[in-house]
Image (tube, rainbow, N blue to C red; front, side):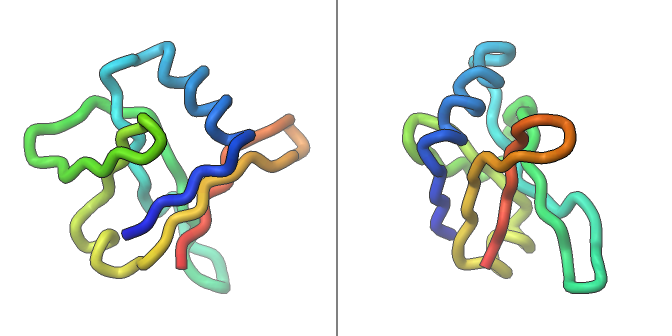
Length: 91
């Protein structure tokens, strides 16, 4: 699985990581829409059985099922009605 993090998203992730410097960003399915799953990201504690991938000094993990199902993860910052938020897309 390849993980790509946009430059503007790196700033947001760094800010989030200040709250939990030992944390890992967990990529997962946050819901389903008529076109398929929606993906999300959350800062979490690293578990013993997590497979961790480090990209640009950020640690990422996901379930083995999801890891086997997707080739690439794109993480970017986008504008929403509530301000800027992280957007995760997977291919």
